[in-house]
Image (tube, rainbow, N blue to C red):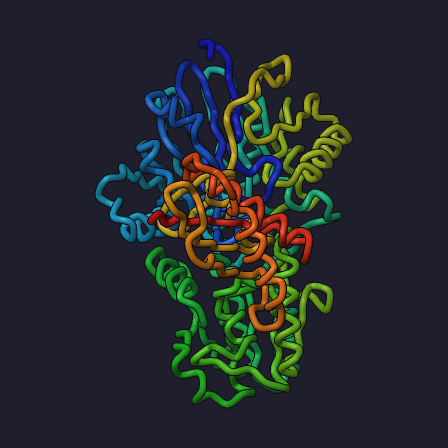
Length: 549
């Protein structure tokens, strides 16, 4: 890194949706923006959450000046409890995000170790070689921020998770005046949200949505449940107000909803709403007077809505005549899980409403019209799309070219891009990847543990115990058990064939040399896998234990 060069390195969130983590490098220092999680896509069984792999910045952490948090969504803040110990740098955020972080860090015993600095809404901070302005942006969580990052290499506008909403209901509108002023100063690069780049027009206003939900819910006769993200504070306010205006009592179902409501009240939000009903009191409410706000809009297996759909929730029962409204977008990769929950609800006789059925959701991310407006305000020399899959990034570059931005570039996780008045160039690659939060530990998504778990899922496991004499001769009947391979009662003949193959493989008439345990293990593994491959077409993970006598 030379003195006058400015670098941008995404470690997460560029080429994928979720796990946002970016680095800016200048004059021998790095500045990190966000540290988020991503949710499982079904490829790593037993793992629900991933984080970016911070290996590159761990090696550089003596030069890491700080971590900036743009806002309090999990895909921007959720990895802090898991990864901060690896980098141990100061954290800077506005009050709402600080409140969320305090809770998270306290839960893992790190609160007293972290230098956590609260930046006022609309405030500024100098961090090493960088000066940063926090510019208010409308989003679905209070205190969304667009970051203006200044250094000797130029001005960068880091704009993820924002929209242009004239009536956001919770939080401030996107600060057009401040962004126009930055444009007048001369913006080197705009690093910009690509989530809705395929959506024409504007994302829509929360204020307009409130009126639509009111009309829909007013026509419902039974219980109504609205599924949304727990962090969508504006939506919580909307549902609460709609409940009051339609004569329903609004309840929260899901611990994260209560946690985020408490945090909002601590920071001066949601003060004008009616108190939410506790879920233990829901059964006492008449069906036509009940409005539930529930977690589980993405079909998460342990969520409140998933348990309600399966009839396993201890406080909430939905039945024929009730309605569930999915007031959120489907995150790519969650389609199957969402569909499973919706099908279970339909089997109960519940009416399911989604974006395809009516105006029940507005996004917190900019559509094409808003993106072009941001270009006009900031007038960047360089456009770097982030916060999207590769197809989103490529389309966003095309939109930038159409809007006559001089330089556009797809920069994916691990790319090191050099930014200058001459344009942008990918100059290096750094280590990147995903870490799986597996129980209470972090492991690589490519670790042998995760890979073996996949093999166990698809092929099952065979467990074999053989008793061998000094020269490797079989002493007694082999013990074999199968998990996820054979039905012991219906496929007894195949079981016997496997036993016979093991015994045959261990017969060594006339042998007087000593056979090692390792030789026996390899031989029995090959024998079992071949026998099952020939009979049922499966070659399970095979574990062999040798007992010597």
